[in-house]
Image 1 (cartoon, rainbow, N blue to C red):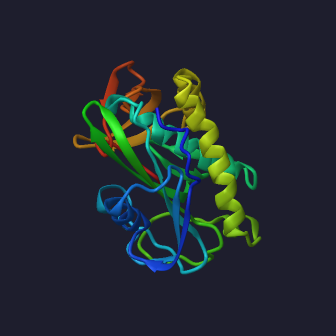
Image 2 (tube, one colour; image 1 turned 90 degrees about the vertical axis):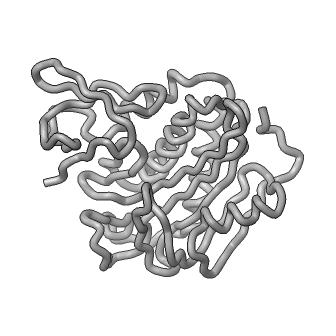
Length: 251
């Protein structure tokens, strides 16, 4: 595996870019950069979410960055472990400042019923393994007004009334993420999956969901190692979903 790099990670600070994931991918196309390197920007003009969704971020107010790792020991069918590690690291970071933070499957971070962080992970495969992973994260930190049509954004500053040091938050996130990454390296996947499951949004009880056939009520039964979500209806019937095949209904 590839954790033991001789080069130290690099930090690329940008005043503005369309997408930190895009910028990092361009850097990688020009040559390998050290594992754990980060691109962070004050202003991300075209931040991307899952399946083309956009991410609103006021310049200089939020933590918008991307990181690269080379998890060439992780099989492609285990790539959800990276998402779990990233999600848990963000949740634990926010847990240090507020309560009621959870992971909305697969990897949105919520405070109560409102979205505080979006994550976009792009894995490149080489054969049956992951050659590199670009991890893009946008955490709402000091922004107090949201103008886009996103349904339920919230920031750390809105919750607490305080203003936060973005560099300090980034440094802490990196420490927390690599703690979980080491678990993957050591093969402690069950522990990672359990921590992830216990951190899930709407983990307990029955809630409304919607799929291609309409609305229904169910509870979260499990998340498979592949990342598939298993929902169980009150009748005991179970439904299995990949990403974007089911949505949470927020009243």
